[in-house]
Length: 124
Image (tube, rainbow, N blue to C red; front, top):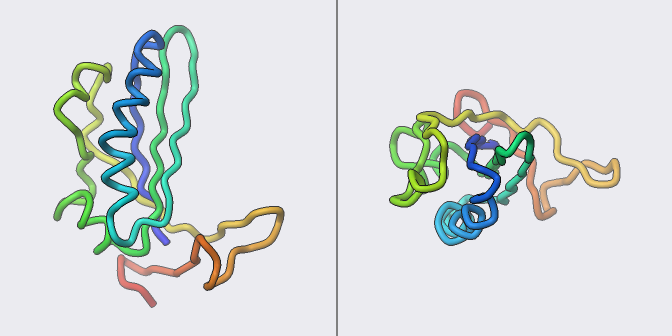
């Protein structure tokens, strides 16, 4: 499984409105794309700034392309993102998910989150 991670910042006063917008755009689009295994949105508020960490989980790099296009390292933005975001980070990061667990128990192949090892984007 592959985790795709994007980071963004808004003014705290626009934080809730931005999250509503994110639900209608990036969350909706990524979660409805074949191969998506989950979406997590984390928010942290400090000094009047809301930081968002947007994490999506995918079966493969090929599945990420269905959402992000051929250049999967490029961040996906929508028309009104400029209205909310303080800067537009051009790239995302991808990480291999080596372990996913709940209550100390690793998920297995038949569970909601499947663990799959990847090497250079090729499922092995």
